[in-house]
Amino acid sequence: MKRTFIKTLVFVVLSLIFFVPPVRGETCFTLLQEKKVAMGIGFGGDTIRFKGTLPQPGATVIVQVKSENNPSLKLVRKGKVVFFWMSVKQFEVSHVPFLYKVFSSKNLTEALNENLKKELNIGYDALKQNLRIKLLSGKPSDDDLSVVFDGFLKMKEKAGLYGVRENVIEINKENSSFMFDLHFSDRAVEGNYAITCWAIKDGVILGETQETIAIEKVGLSRWFTYMAQHHSAVYGIIAVVIAIVVGLLAGFIFRGKGGH
Amino acid sequence: MDIFLPIAGMSFNFLVIVGVGGLVGFLSGLFGVGGGFLLTPLLIMIGVPPSVAAASDSNQICAAATSGAFSHWRLGNVDLKMGLVILIGGVVGGTVGVQVVKYLREMGNFDFVIRAVYVLILGGVGSAMFVESLNAIRKSKAASAQGGDIGPNKFSLFFARLPFKMHFKRSGLETSAIFPFSAGFLVGFLAALMGVGGGFIMVPTMIYIIGMPTIVAVGTDLFQIVITTANVTLQQAITNHTVDLVLVVVLFTGSVIGAQFGVRASRFLRGEQIRILLSIIVLLVMVKMLFDLLVTPDNVIGLAKAAGGH
Image (cartoon, rainbow over all chains, first blue to last red; front, side, top):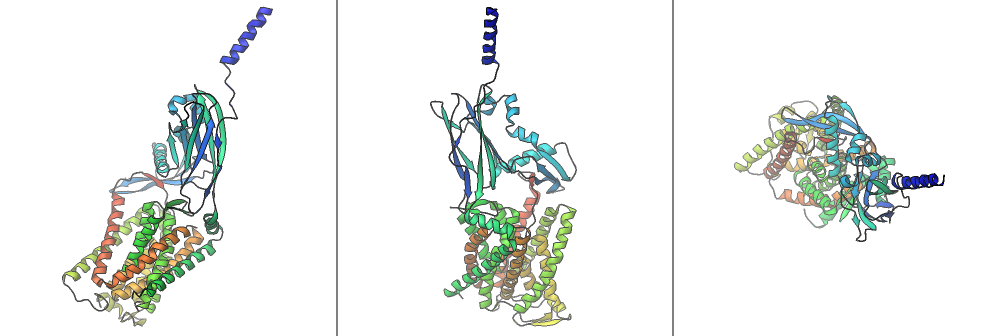
């Protein structure tokens, strides 16, 4: 009886050690120094520094940045008709983020196995699977999804709104902490951006943290946007008055210099 | 030195925007064109969204044209009566043009139609001006006090026989009001269709078809551009919310100075020299648009074009 009990105990302990996945650490490891990006008149993009501690030495750090407000958009596909390139199809594209970036401390293919990729829903492949396209005009073809997705990626990467960059998160010599500068493009729009950070080792997630960064227009930039959206007639009149006054003023200034 | 454009939602180097404004302002003062056909493509080329570029362009041109028109008015180069008749025609033509644009959009592939019309009109106007100006320079025609004017032609003689005769003192013309009204209508219609101010069509029309002295055509055109662009700015602000005042103010800085230099430069050039320069610029824009239609694009996927233009 005693021997059976000991055997059972050993079995349970070994099972816990070898078969039960480690509990994800919620304390985890990211530390954002600022959680707000202010877009004033002098804004030209902004950089936010991440610092954190690795749950275990040798872990890979992956950071994903994703916009929370993702409206659908209309895209056109161009084709050659006789000698000329023109729009031949129009699509409505939805279920893709406005901004999407992934950064890592090692190669993603080394850090993520197929199961983890599916679980984390990370990378361009995952985006392609989520993407929905609706043909608004033109004839459908088999390659529509891949052509639209590839062109969409190219367009977003060119604007600095999409990117997957491996081996860019710095880990210290002691293998205990990491640091990373996240650059927000000036093309980012107002709204919340979810930043998810994972620490992964041997195909197991050791820790996961999610934080939100808000991008907001401030000062004159905010006032202009508010007026243009909510008091558009007043805004238009102001624009015309400024144009005429500045034009006349310039005329007087130059007359003063005796040009004519 | 970056500056954030709140409506466009992006930032640019301050000097780049001032430089673009200065270049277009100079050409505006020199040729009497609004510069929309140059400013909008230039802004799009540096990355400003087309709808914001077109709307803000109207507002900037309003300032540059006010400055230029004021200078020409002081020099006595504005035929106010002619300008008003053309303006009325332009408003009617523009209204009809907007309806045609709406119909074409519903038919599909409006973008291609616009570019094709651009190529045809710019190619036709530019080539005609280039050939005429080149001939004038070769023959070393004596420039008049107003600078190389075309004088009466078969069009102006035909219209002079039509009813609703008016006397346009500053232009030295006695002709039917139908004539400048029709010219204004045509330009207003094309301006709505092509999304530009129409100065590059209006100035040659005034010179070659109406028979106005070159310098009066330039001054009068600037006058009608002020009114047209003020109206378009207001409409764009109310309808599309795409006028970026920060972009406009920075463009002003360069353009109002550029326009003054342009007006001064125009005094050192004869009429045919101004025309040949304008024709070369018109032809270059035409070649660029034709090139875009023929060459394989970098990316076959693009954003569906937003409405805009004036």
